[in-house]
Amino acid sequence: PTFDFDPIHVGQVVNNLISNSLKFTSSGGSIKISAKPAIGSIVVSVSDTGAGVPKDKQHLLFTKFTQLSGAEHGSVGTGLGLYIVKGVVEAHGGTISLESEEGRGTTISFSLPMNSKAKPAVEQHPVVLQENKQQRMVN
Image (cartoon, rainbow, N blue to C red; front, side, top):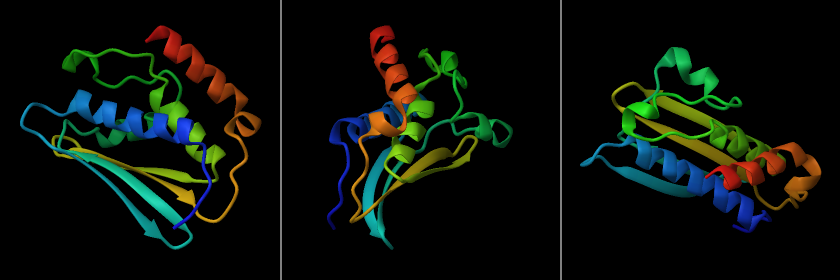
């Protein structure tokens, strides 16, 4: 299928999701990345067999400055990654979803519409992209 998207920012989305899976999946676990067409869109998923996210914390994941149990796994961050991911996906007219079970892993999927021109992300979400630049300076 054909669709238009900002390859740099969508690449950052995929990179962030893979990075999070690597942080929270122990040695011997697995990470699966898939992309498949759906009705009017393409769906990209990153699944892992990692720690999972407790049900009562899942609603917090895509909010600003939320960092869940990263220190336990030897990783720290700004808590902006998934907030920025959500902003980039939505700037493309897409959606993002989370499926997770504590102790059994997590799948984060996002969809991007096909056959539609996405406005440059900076036009729709300048704050998200500014925060993204700040995050790169912190890392």
